Length: 170
Image (cartoon, rainbow, N blue to C red):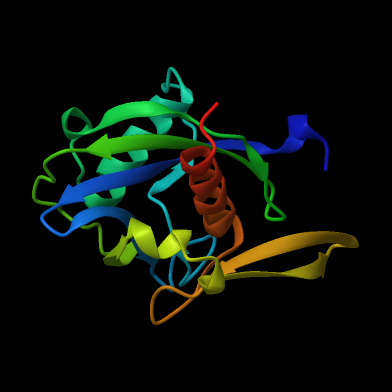
């Protein structure tokens, strides 16, 4: 698929400070959304023409999906884009939330908000990958077994990037 034909999108990779330590915030998508039904994901979605940046897209989508006020998020930076088999080019925007405000979940899009301790993702025994062929293209797909369902696909790829950045800062 040509990059020009892909839909630009962004996700927020929210690192939340909690009394127990740092946790990543995920959403479990409903079975009625158009894309990625029932999957564990980061809040985010397709860019609108009114968005001024990937961070703007990620923050707007996070507000629409879970009611996360953009003023609660400090943007730390962006990681590498990923082209998905579903036709998106996704930019992961890493954000830090010192104090999580109350959330208003959009039940049409989000079935559940999930918090997973960040330290679990640094345990290499909880990560594996396999080669999957989709539309004639073989790709390595990552999985983290850190919850009752695996975190996998693009979401796991972004978590893997985050772990690598934290382990090996430039």
